[in-house]
Length: 274
Image (cartoon, rainbow, N blue to C red):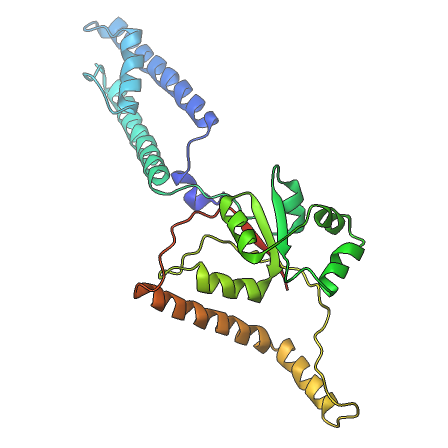
């Protein structure tokens, strides 16, 4: 956890133990100072239990009467008040943060992470699992891919998405195809969706082909231009722009009441085949 949000996180057990020790040490020092002052000058005595209970009372903001009878004890008391102010402010902010912000689990990104989960299943769409995709999974030499293939379920797209919504299930699908489905059917007017799409996809198809007449004079120039567009990132940019435009139109339609809003929590994930 990064340091700039550490003050808003729950105090660990070590901190609670350190606070208990601090109360006992501070109360003991205060009692020794008061005892020494009473032995030298006389006057009011302070019991050991009073010093401990006062230190604890300040920490929980329920302090009793000031037990200090000397200047040194008052200085020690002032530093303890400042210390308790910092501790109680941090604890209060932590409590408020955890009562107002729901905890989110870390999403799954890779096939390896799928295998590491307990009671987690996955599948793919029946329209996807054919041709070169089947060949990729069934003939792959990687042990992870082979293990994924053994437990792969081939489902209807609607059934697969419902399983993802039910929880502890991931859908392996083409990135742009599933992004379009989610944008149209599972995104509300505020852009919220119950699905998470992995940022670390993997490639199944090494290349896409275009059909031209044999001996066409412009084939080499066309291939060269397509490679330039891909290398410059324009192909991915245009595709992402189309998906983003579709999402904006979907949210606009939802704001007019044409689509019911969704308030699901992310229970599943979609791994991506690029």
